[in-house]
Image (tube, rainbow, N blue to C red; front, side):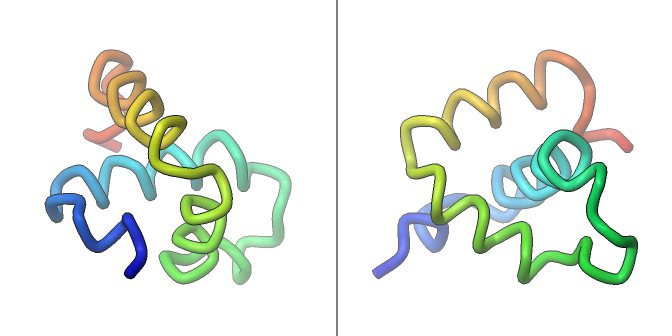
Length: 64
């Protein structure tokens, strides 16, 4: 089972938004979607994902 399934919907949405803004800013617009963001989230692992959620909430990225 993937750790992304253990996250709440709000955490998952925040994490996806952070990944799209930070990690996918140079990708073509048609490549930036939830599926591709989820693949990056799976690759970085749960520890980094937890820190990214905190950074997203603290910096207000989730409200974009």
